[in-house]
Length: 314
Length: 314
Image (cartoon, rainbow over all chains, first blue to last red; front, side, top):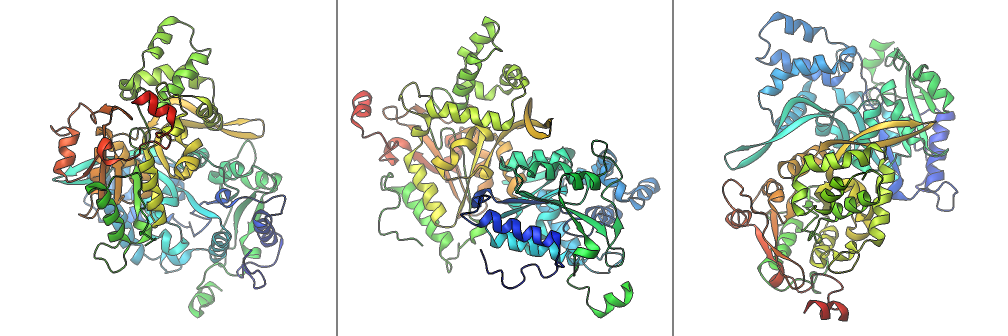
């Protein structure tokens, strides 16, 4: 165990969830504990949008595509433009519609390297419409603390996102301390192309895997052939992954509930039902830890005590 | 650098290839070298069949399927049985035929856990027809030494196999010191099923990805979003991967050439051509290191100096 005399989760208010996280870490890392877990089995999986950073009013990846498409030549008529402008959160589920819209964009023969470079450029300058901050500033500090504490205790952290892996990879090392190889996410087909003597991998506008709902479990299984012992999500899309992590009573399953419309946003996990139950009800029945962002998180963003932010948001 | 006063590759005869491997490691790990590579970029990829262990007369995975199918109820008629009995090396390329044959087997609703358990059971007792040894004894000692030396020098080793990842995972940690998450291999589709309150991932008889030829590059790119700086293969199926690794003059690309019909087998990489050239010719033109197993490897198998083996094979 690392030194726990100092508070290892300072952005968390004292309470049930914080205590459960600390107890869990102690149980699985104490060699003579009945719940001890060997290091190579200490796998933690984290959803990204809404679990590690802000997903409202528009998923960051959608904001990126919107910007890219508005800039691109593929927008030859008003109707496409209108569809882009009207993108909302619902679009993340409209895989077919999104695919169609991106066909023209990907048809340009973009390589994976070029795609990631475009994401890097965008994320370095794009500002979130409400906070007027870079998207990477909108990472939840309490979750960064959890990931850091896990890493200090021999856990291996993975991102498992419905968003595309290549959208997250360019900045995940700096922001989450998670390398490219531990980003599991949706992907389109790729093909190997040869330019002269050089090989390149090009993106195709055809979905390959969609890491959402059961796809998250299948993505984890395909990569790791192991179950996580801790999983964090915030939505219906994460329920299967949290259930998959629940191998023993000792597993840690956490659902982030967006309850803070002053500092962040207030919304439910998803209106759709999971086997006839709301995600929140299902989570409570499973004894998962539900984080009440307003009351459990002392600090959400590292910048929230800045004068400007306080003025605008209070 | 680890201590290189002792011979770090004792199973290799002194020679061009051994020296190139040692030089490569020194170049990429010496901080003030012009060719220094940071640890997280030191990625090495290894084909499995024919590169790390024996693939003749029948790929181990084919021998496993043959045994499984001979044992299984799915064999209701002689024609299927005959097809199984006639499987040869060529079958590895007959994905369609293999898929059909396995449809019945996978239709039984096998979970990934069950599949890996079956592999574990099989590999613990199956014997190679010629050597009368377990398949895991038929790993090439010189390659184990390379993988170990790489690991000691901050490399991350990956298996990239046309065989299925779940066939390799059950024994790769013990034999290669490579964890499940670093096995990249072919896979079939999976689906999430629910038995009562328990979730399980079941295999479907539908190909999902085939890590062969360009598929090896795409599999690496999809998982790591990075190029290897060292790649080892033995066949046409590995040429794209070796080319992909050849990002700089300093990369290490090695083609294992099976030249020893006394201790192992003697055969060429593949009769088919790569852009009009034989694999061997292409490798030489690219200045890849071609390993002549007979003359470059002092020891192939750890057991080869045993009295019984020597008697039978000389």
